[in-house]
Length: 428
Ligand SMILES: [Ca+2]
Ligand SMILES: [Ca+2]
Ligand SMILES: [Ca+2]
Image (tube, rainbow, N blue to C red; front, side, top):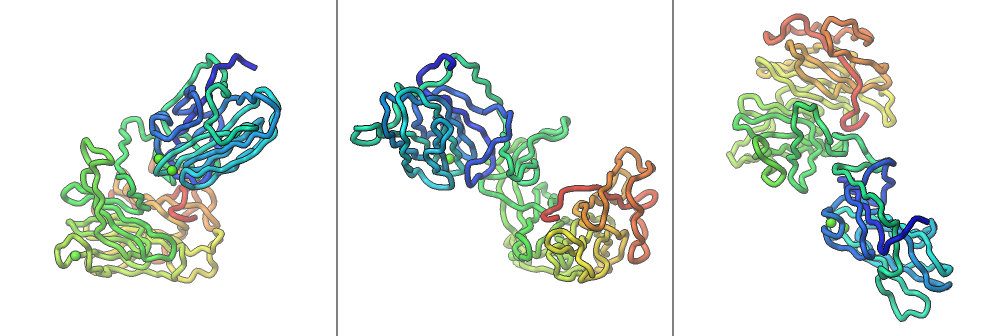
């Protein structure tokens, strides 16, 4: 046993995700906080080393028992916690709850026993208290400093930044905050507290405000559009204001501002949004174009690009739950890149043979690039960005369902659509 000093060791891990129960931290992570505390009796942000929401706490040390006997412990926590003595679970108080007590009784011999408490805090208040009722005591009291010890003289190493739980949705950008960007860019968090949009499209209004579309869930018409003020320059989450300007959209996966007017690609159509009474809330939904749509949950319309009177977007194929491509497809002409005439609504095909082409963008020389999600239709494929003429490992793109349209004037050279693997949005 290493030399001891009175108290316990408190470690706090800033997981930054809203947990519902205690998570298993990925191994080898340095805590954000590591400090000696006199007893387990904490409720303030200061107690937890400056953290108040979305963190995980570990308490380690030893408990010194004055005599053999039956000891009842009382663990009060907000949110969940558990107490282990000598590695045995004595109190399981996991889950989301307020500062409620939970008791557990254990037979202990006189002497020192290892103590371990795991705890997590999601939102609201945060509390962790360990009390006990030794044999013969009248009631419960916080386990005193004199009955606690931890290794003395240790080097307490901490590191800032987000810590990760095992088994959680754990890719930055997919359920977790981004933790880094290209070194020549600066990462600034702009999301106001409480604003958790399922963003599917982003574009800029002429006045510099950002507009975003949101998904709204599977087989829903709960997609929305928000305008965000104060997103450029020296700003942060406290300055940004999000205002909802449209709702009731069918899983929009793309949004474009053209001459100050908003267009969204819903699953079944391209829609122009209008505000007839000038109150800033969109109340007019005009169908610009429709395309083949069979009502399958996976038939998204990913976009939008716009240039010189034409929109460009991708249609994903229908799939069965589990990932197999629906056979036969409920609607023809899916898995394609489309071109839509803004004035007439005429739809023409640029490319086919895609599965879940959930990204579309302009290449450096005006080409259209599509990113595709792998699955039953496509083999895994790589995509080289180094040269437009480099030979590709992709299988040839099947012929488009109709003759490709003329290249827009912005486009130099031949149009091509390339694909690479990418996590599906929002399902694969
Ligand atoms: Ca809190
Ligand atoms: Ca709480
Ligand atoms: Ca209105």
